[in-house]
Image (cartoon, rainbow, N blue to C red; front, side, top):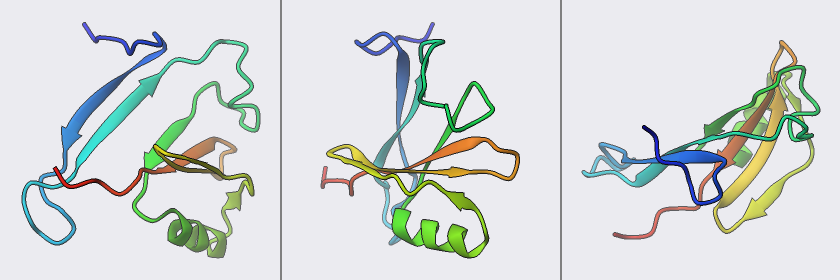
Length: 108
């Protein structure tokens, strides 16, 4: 089975990019997270869906600027933590999508 995180609400799958942006190998470490929210959560409140997809991005500010130019609805709220920066958009179907820019990797 899948081993859950200590908080019990999800799991993280750690992996490594095959190549770094400059072509060197191996690339930076990364993770994929899967998390269960309580049925009463308000975290998805701006969406019609009972779930949210979170995309890991390399440059949050540049992506948001491109999305804005394309007419995508962007939530003005931002959150910054030691584990990354977050922003939210709404897709054309009304689904809220979370964008996460992790901190730049430290040298291994």
